[in-house]
Image 1: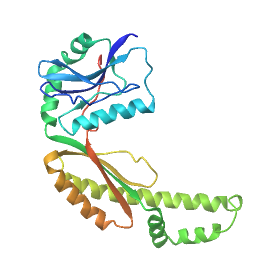
Image 2 (image 1 turned 30 degrees about the horizontal axis):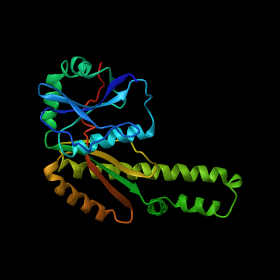
Image 3 (image 1 turned 90 degrees about the horizontal axis):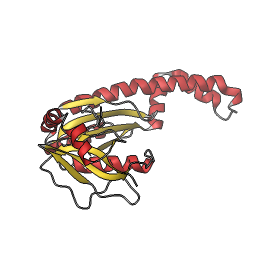
Image 4 (image 1 turned 120 degrees about the vertical axis):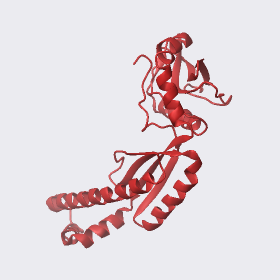
Length: 250
């Protein structure tokens, strides 16, 4: 085995690692800190020849980062960062970027990322499309009970109209989420839809002390959208959308 260090994140040097914290590996390996002046790298030992990229590896990477971000400021490092040893972590990563990392950690102190995801209720979207465009009702009637081959053009046209309706409603819903989040966040970032029925996918950098206010505001939005959009709030998370992640050597 050729031992190396897998780097998950940069954190303040004065934090302590939970003895139960685990990272990559089968079985999962304990994590530790490599400290340098006012910052530290969160790492675990890994076989340098071990291939990375399995779904379990990415899950373990993100799980550790998010658990850490719930307690202390975290600068997440892009998945797959392997360094030759503890000395190289300091010499090639922490020392050259010390001041930049320290400033970023200071700015993140007391903050975490939260992601708000909205998913349209499909039937509600279709019903709204029917109300706004009589052609939808006609097309649905034309294809009902008929084979796909015989109604190919009608199905394609119906799909186009519904997709256009979803995109328009998504823009409106996302705008509402951004407006609400801007009242409770220090920064907001729109993310790409992850599903064709996404109503919104927005990240917010929020003071963790104000999480309750954020939850209450979103409960109001969810009430307004009851039956049309289902909302989910994820967090606290590492600030993936608000810091420039990198790998050692970059």
